[in-house]
Length: 349
Image 1 (cartoon, rainbow, N blue to C red):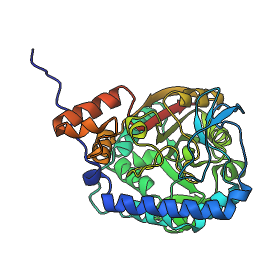
Image 2 (image 1 turned 90 degrees about the horizontal axis):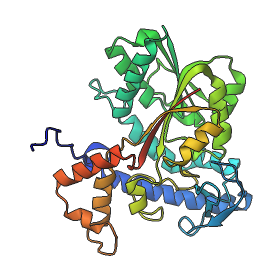
Image 3 (image 1 turned 60 degrees about the vertical axis):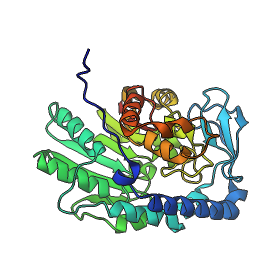
């Protein structure tokens, strides 16, 4: 019987995201900055309960690069950094350390060039917004952790092309004030503050709140979720992406090895790891209903194939023998099984 399903495409990380040189530069700078923060602030680090379920019993795992402690919760099996960096340490990391500026420059380089090819996340959100506009006349959108507004600018362009922008308002907040000052689109309303402070100082409610690769960075993600819940209308949507620690790439390459994309555990940046399992409990505990969870990541097999090539001791080394056609099929299966390392969640208040 002939297969009528089209052959899944193979996605190359280097061709479609960033070069290995860029990835290595960011990785090495992040490690240098992590060591600086640890030496400067480790005496202020505090032990904490599990940020996912709130339980206080845990076991120690291998430390992150022989410095930051990493533990596993006995109750929900979530993995997180413990002791946790202090607020002063995180403030120093995000406002003073070089790695964030290096990454921000990479994001700004992807800003409007006059011929934007919409990213998968922008395309997904435009369709989500289109469906919501079938229920209401206007959508108020807030991005948390917007940096210099690169994604909001891309989303704005896409909405304008689809003749939806007149029915939408776009705002963004980020704790990094220096990134806000480098706004890539002056037509956006961007504010330099935390979501907790923003929720205390505004009476505005939003129809859709979005954030990308943010919640794993936060010292207190549960309090963050409560603030998002407060900012949403009763029928509002909360959409975000975060690494999936149970994803193929994260399992195949540990958090102490070089990787082009940061592992779910990468302090002081990534302080706890989410999975397709614990995110459900965490969302319900925060007052949300789960509308959709999937893993649309496209780079797992490419990253793993290149990382383990020539290393016969790695249990996934045989993947380097696959053809591009076979690798594309494997990646497609990972996405269907919610087993790739990039997780996408949509919650309903």
